[in-house]
Length: 138
Image (tube, rainbow, N blue to C red; front, side):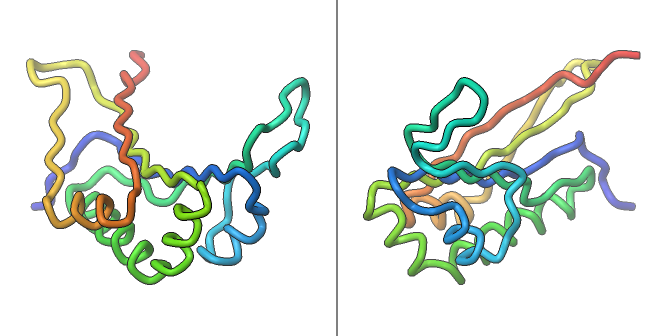
C-alpha cells in the first residue's frame, strides 16, 4: 500500500535583472502562474527584476514526491545550457518545496532529501527554500 504524506507542492521561481519572462517560458517549456518584466509596474509595485513563478508539481503520495524531485532534476539537466547562462548573467533560480501539514499527532513535519537531488541543485547554483504551512482546521 502506498504511503500518503502531507500535501506538497514544488514551485520554480526565477528572477533576473533583464531577461524577458517569455524567454524563460520558451526555454523551460513551462507556463508560469505569474511573470513580470524588469521595470514593469503592476498596481503600485514596479518590478526591479524580471520575475517568473511556476507551480511545477504537487501531490500527496510518497511516490509522487519522489517523482516530482526526479522531474526537477530532469528539467535542470535537460535545460542546463539555459540555466548556466541565466545564472551567469545575474539570474537567481529557486526551487521552493511547499508542504501543508496536519497538526494532529506528535510529529509535525519530516523531510528527507536525497543527496543526488541536492547535488544536482548545488552544481547548477540553484537555491532551495522550504515552506511549511498548517492545514486549515475545520
